[in-house]
Image 1 (cartoon, helix red, strand yellow):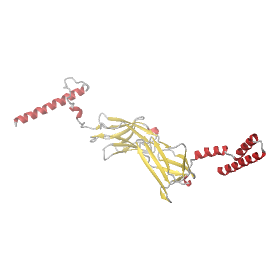
Image 2: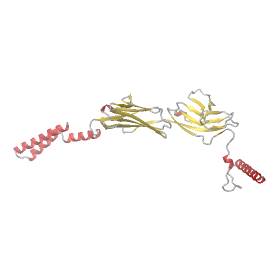
Image 3: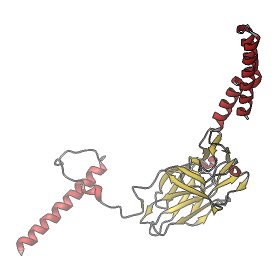
Image 4: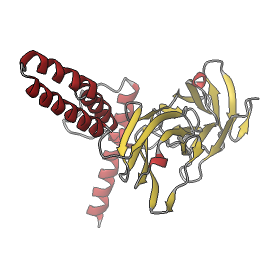
Length: 315
């Protein structure tokens, strides 16, 4: 028994020596390693602060988007009777103390998150001009502060395509709207057809769906119109809650040939197989190379027949 007690006392004494040694090295700069055995742990580095402090993982950079509230957390711990204040760095204006607001700008407020214990500064309807540093302070003596940089970005919307979309009747129309620089998803993304809100669902054999996915700072919304008809042609617009509306023109074709090919091919064939041009070329060739009248008559008749065939083909 006495041996066990003696061993326990020696271990306690050894632990106290290590703690005292860690504190002495911390007071002299914390970078000295003389007298410390290689591989020996610095037990003081693992000790948890007892008084008010900020958690090591407190964020120092927050990105918010125009159109969505900005939330700037402050991970203050072990506050006891101390309070937390938020100060705007550029003018040293006290915005909030605990949950009380000390600014005429009603966009600012602060609250304590019950699930994490963080004191969160909330900025509703943020603007790019609100970007800058904000200080979270604990009312210790001296005051304990940490700075957080807030960047307010302006999201932009893009409709994938080259300004116009061509598809065949009966196929599926797929339009994708991409919202860039949006750290949080937009509150809503509305789709318009001919400046009227698109009604989603199924009716008369047609189905209209919208799929929205958010990843990182990008949100993608896809409009799917199954079994498209000519009525589905026209201007389509995408309007996110935090970005400007953007539009694209859609053309649903009756034939199975894309419009670009139709335009190019039809004009080329019409030019090459124009009835008047065929007749003129044939007549010129006949006069130039056919000396006999009978042969000339039959040659011109053949040219006229080819011209009439070309005329009806172009129609």
